[in-house]
Image 1 (cartoon, helix red, strand yellow):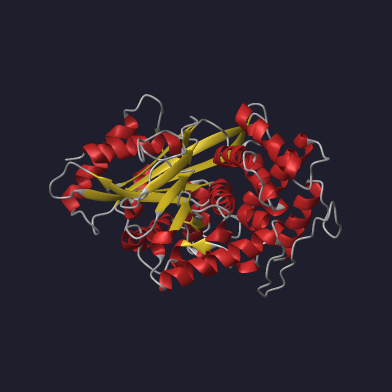
Image 2 (spheres, rainbow, N blue to C red; image 1 turned 90 degrees about the vertical axis):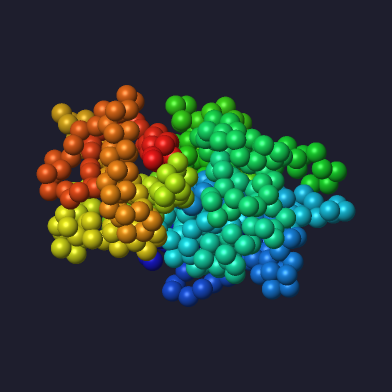
Length: 448
């Protein structure tokens, strides 16, 4: 916990605010010493009160009054911030109208998984939120299964997510903000924004400011939320690096900074400081075991197939910033079999049929850093599919990956030790989850 406080101070020092001081009435973050401490300021109070009101209304059967703003199940800082920002805006921009909207951000990750992203933990702490994430509504805190709750809601808003997960597919999609590929979901959603930016938070914040500035009287915008927005944009754009940031990222950051407690400071210095501190926190993962690494950045859902005997397959993708060899060293026995035993236990618990683990790490070659990626493919035969089907499905995915012209795969150096329906490759392309996932999904959907 001491390291978190040090990182927190680092972030505040990197940006214009220094821990232990005040700058334009900026309150220092709450220090956590093993006990739950309530957050300070309007943003924390609003978030906690909204969560309470949502649960009270659910108990009273008033779910139809609520809009859930949800990001993707990976739960990164961008997804979380975009959801919190739009929920805050929806509620406050309509509070004095004839049709006030009740909105709450839903983080589609379990509570105990939030701290698997140290950058989120740090950003929330410096936004003066209650420790232990008590201000936030997480997936495991929903009092009702999403498939039944989705039918009762006013609707959902998707941020940093192009289409709803299967369990939310029956909900009305009110709005979509995403910086990835448009998958055609929610054609009647309004606003419906798809634009290539480093951060989805950019799209949400821009829309929020556009609408805010058109109001007859602006609502209160807490500095804690503004600074959370800047942090999300900073880490996704590498501090507004010209090779990463779009024009929208830059211009929106300027507008947000002007309203923040850091308005008198240089934009690039603020964003570089935020990026440095949050990126440092993001890399602080050495204390995590393999199971936590597998679930830390996991995205998955049911995928339809054309197979009459197996119409749906559960497909999941984990992203890990360690090599297979380094992950094996994190297991109890530090052996290959233990990696697959832990992986099997995790995928069994999550009900996953097809698991793709995407690793990325850096090595040094001739004094220069070199980025290496790995793909670990595993197909199970004990959830929805039998052994013959699993063999067939594994071959279909294997062929799709190895014949794709965009990536050149090399078998892993211990490939001879793998069991049936297990494969690991290495490659040096830039193909991450955004590239690999559609290849695998298309193969699964075409599987007969």
